[in-house]
Amino acid sequence: MYVTVPSDFDLENAQSCIAHATTALPQTSLKAGAHLFREGDEVERLHQVTSGVLRLTRLLEDGRRQVIAFGYPGDIVGFPSNGRHHTDCDALTDVHLQPYRRAALEDGQGDPLLHKNLLQAALREIGAMQDHFMMLGRKSASEKLASFLLVLSSRCGESVGPYTEIELPMSRSDIADFLGLTTETVSRTFTHFRKNEIIALERSHTVIVLSPEALRAVAQPED
Image 1 (tube, rainbow, N blue to C red):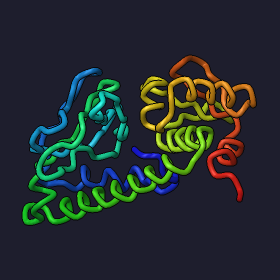
Image 2 (cartoon, rainbow, N blue to C red):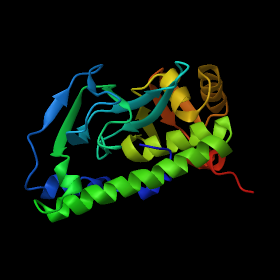
Image 3 (cartoon, rainbow, N blue to C red):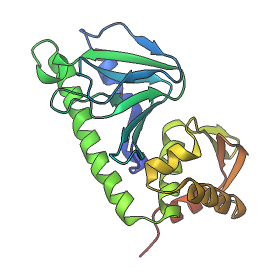
Image 4 (cartoon, rainbow, N blue to C red):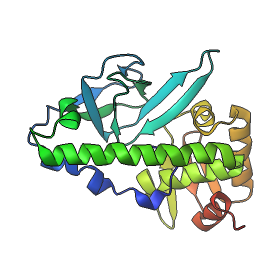
């Protein structure tokens, strides 16, 4: 999951691979904290998240970490780069996964529709990655965090009366490393949103969106 326009993700369509696949492997599970793969491992399987949340990260040469993306239900992780994984991937929560053979992406002879769906998912990831890079370079801290919360609200928010509740399985440090900010800036921005009654913070991992209109105004300010 990258910070893109939340309305452009269709979970039902994204999971069509699972519904149709005639060559799907048995579903697997992963406990919170366990690694699905590590950077440099040979790609043998692609995995579609059916429940839970994954974290994809890379370490820079100086030891700093970059969170590349989060894998939410419907997302497919593990697309190869020269046949190998280009990130580490671990589970932030208990996760259930639908694996697919790498050959299903590279060869459409076994299941042409699955092959097409996987290619479309790879193209969506490339587009979302480009949007994310643009966001990292152009948006302010408030705009970045507001965009992030809007995407999560659309993807996994739960209605609580007139409001939307979001569970954040990731830490403030994870969010900072994803948005290209410091942990202190992320914490201050959360506090700013709370004081302006845009959100409420029930617990450190629970955000309630009180005013989605105000959040959208922050994320996409008028010129």
